[in-house]
Picture (tube, helix red, strand yellow):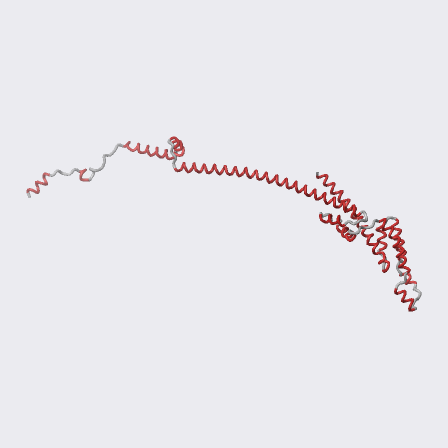
Length: 292
């Protein structure tokens, strides 16, 4: 009993601070101790915000290249190369455009020259054909040349087709046709006086009778009369009128006049082709001279 009380009596009583666990807390600082931390935070914030403006000069001064700056440098190099490539491409494209323009101009000149040469050859071929058809000589070679160079245009082609059968022998002139028609007129008169097979059978069987007035009125014009009218037209240099008159012949008279009539029609077609060729040549040469 005594020992326990003595030991308790000798112990020092605990202080209130030790009793509440405040021995480990740091001493309280004065009120102005938090200002340096705030200044440091503001400085860091300012440095972060203004970093894009002052960090590049600092890196260049210190010869440092951060990853972002190095990547930007590579992008600048690639952009420069791309711009240079585009410039080179534009230059080559301009050169190519100039070359194409020159080539087109030269091609147009060649085409114009070629067209002019073809026109000249066509004109020469037509003039040669015209000269040969104006004479009673063959013109088959000249006609082939005209067809080969496209000289048979719309108005001329039908006329050349109508005279093509005479190209190997030639077409008589109007003077020759007038001379030959004199003998043809005698032949037509002979066909008129020559009795036909029907007339001979009528006389043989005794069936002859005097024609009625209506039959005499319906009887066609005699070949000799038609020949006389055609010869009068030929004397007036009207070959076309003579051909139209002789086209009314029938029977033996028509067969007798058919060869001469074909030559006369060919001569008319040749004369018409002559006029068309002359007009075409004059018009074509006029355009060609104005162009040059």
